[in-house]
Length: 173
Image (cartoon, rainbow, N blue to C red):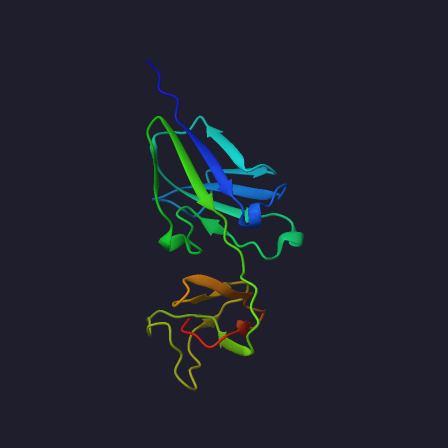
């Protein structure tokens, strides 16, 4: 008897949007450097079949720049790969992902910083005058409100590694 492994994925869009072009990427949870499969879709349901039994992480991201307020979202609704839920496949599985978006904000505050790569971890904080490490460009940076548990702003570090998160209200991020 042959078992067919599949993943029936439901993509829950913010504001019940329809017709959004998305890319669904499936990663091996143990070796996540390169996606095993990538599928482009315009629907809210995706069927991925002919899978091996195993543990996977799913990433869903908008394809079009017209959907700039939608964020790459991982299984479990996480914005970070390292915090994504692992989806076990052994036979068929149904799974839902709530796609995240940037919240409209009326705030006047900003967080700015520099993204660097270091051998040692300083707890994510930069010391004044730090000149060690390599600056990283193209890194997504998110401001998530700890009191509201939602994303309030996002940015991508520029060619020099700097980012600005704008439109923030008084909160803890």
